[in-house]
Length: 274
Image 1: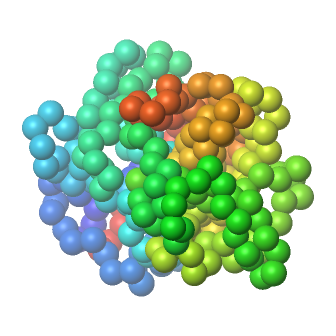
Image 2: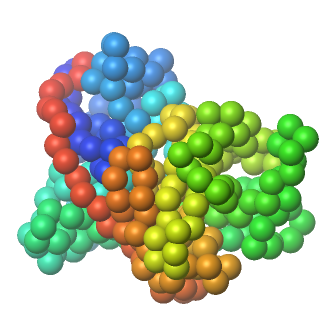
């Protein structure tokens, strides 16, 4: 069966949105997802957002999230923004969606930017999950004999934040996969390499679980800011500069969701045979 797709850039994050709300097709097998995610054999993507009919009243749609390696994950902030852009809404309007991590909202600005509610961050090790006896702001993590001080955050999916002096020469290609597969993260982890430039601006590169380094990561940006706010290093609204562009992350603190805002740009349209 052929299903239509729209390929978008969410601040450089390549997102494939497949609308399965009417067809009711099964999700392709992991091997097929890997072929679709490879630029040489498919449309190519960092994450695929598989749209389904909403499970609850008031939600426009539900979705599932798949990485380029065929694995299913809990959330994708830039993917959520692309889904919201695909579904559409008037400037100032807000829509609700059902995500694997729970109900989320998206709002539309007049300049084409899309903002999404990422839910409240959790710093409990069990929520990430991360092997630690008690919760702390930072943890020592032994990676190949080098001990790093890291923060861990759940944004509905697992994140580890490492501070670096400069993101341009950060060892993303080596430390990223080593931390992703570290035994203290039993479900693997997304790794953010953060440089704090001021209380309202950071640089960030993210090595994503199941996708490798991407040009942008919405949940990674949210986790890096939330961790910084918790430590008192950042203010409540922060501009996050990533290789693919800029995102704005806002968090009012415990009891409130993180909001993620950025641009969405169409790339191509087509069909995939599942």
